[in-house]
Amino acid sequence: GQEATAVGAIAALRPSDYILSTHRGHGHCLAKGADPGRMMAEFMGKETGYCRGLGGSMHIADVEGGNLGANGIVAGGIPIAVGVGWSMKAQGRSEVCMVFFGDGASNEGAFHEALVCASIWQLPIIFVCENNHYAMSLPVGTAVPTADISDRAAAYQIPGVTVDGNDLMAVYEAATVAVERARGGKGPTLIEAKTYRWRGHSKSDRNLYRTQDEIQMWKERDPIVRFRSWLVDEGLLDEARAEALIGEAKVAINAAVTFAEQSPDPDPSILEDAVYA
Image (cartoon, rainbow, N blue to C red; front, side):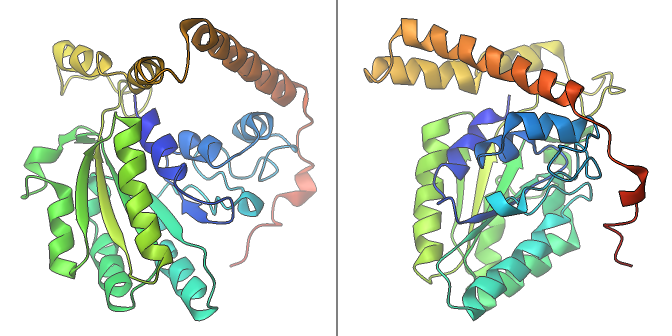
């Protein structure tokens, strides 16, 4: 249920720009242009994966494609984004960095430290908070004292905007403004995209902290269905082509799975190649 945020935000970037992702970052990876086969191979721990099977689902990275990595640590990517932004500014480069994180991460110290540094140094960073309303099982309303997480931007003297995270075009428009601002040397922006995860935090999550009525309400706001309807209403897509695209996506997914399944396992000799400390 969170597809619109990843696709809408990353669509505002150039291929040469950078992203940092989260433990729930498969959509970010694909939206940044990753090959589905290599991504699936990484999930299965195969040699042909982006990290030769060493990163897996939660730590996948496609550095050449500008995806500097997902991070299993809550808020772990946020300070890294500050380093990327500082590097871009110090080198006089035009690239920007977009970092994704959840509502729970906005309560971590790293979030606040990063926004302080990014604001003071006017770094080219777009902070995208995917507020899916629950940090594991903790409702955002019991953990965040402000009505909107974007309200926190005021403390750091940077723009903060809240958008419907299930409306792809709303996300894209907000991201476009933020990217242009960052690329123009005017500093960071905090975007809060209010969205929802349909499934539990993990496969062991029994969803006892929310009702089925709540889940169903959000499923009726399916971002894929909404964007499809918008494209049809705008005359940019007809129903026949929409159905064909769904078929093409299924073929691509099946091909990616087959590629991964047929790929070799990595040689055990590479086990320590990525250990630096």
